[in-house]
Amino acid sequence: MTIRRLVALPLLAALLTGCGIRATEVPTDFGAAPSRVPCSLTGPDRATQSSHGVPVQVFLLCGASLVAVDRTVPVPEGTPDAKRRVIVAQGLLDQLAASPSAAERSAGYTTYVPGGLGVRGPGPKDPEDALRLSTAPSRLTAYALAQLVCTLSDSAATEGDGSVILGGPDAGPLRRYECTDEVRERPAGTQPPSSEVTG
Image 1 (cartoon, helix red, strand yellow):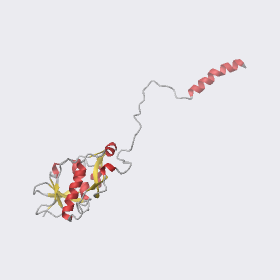
Image 2 (cartoon, rainbow, N blue to C red):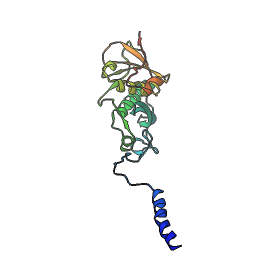
Image 3 (cartoon, rainbow, N blue to C red):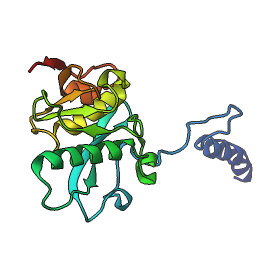
Image 4 (cartoon, rainbow, N blue to C red):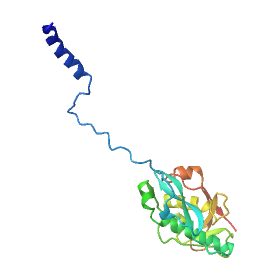
């Protein structure tokens, strides 16, 4: 009986060790554990919001697409509509050109709209809802133009019909730009649809 036990012990030990995970000399690296979902903010970012002003949305780039984030633009009470449109438009441009907050940057947000970009209302022969930029739209990068068009086209700065009439600083031609699903999803490779505005 004792001899049988002595023979059985090595067999039992071999079976038990075979049930575990064997050590390996081959290095394994599956990367760091995911920390957060890209383009996902956990809540309102107080650094980018204020209790004073008109609530607006601007489009920032996150991943390969445009994503709307909340902002506010200060507008004095009693401002006439024509002037109000330009104030809102300039506020939107300033918000787009500003560096995203720390929370937004950590979630993957960025912007391509250059700083110092200005906007004014229509010229003497322009439609009343036209906006003229200090830099011609054709000189902006694909990302920056997509951000501008999608932000302005559905704001208090325009008619809110999904389009915006933009031109350069001089009396050059105006174009009506549209923000489409394709532009929001692929701003790098999809030019905002546009058509020339006459008279």
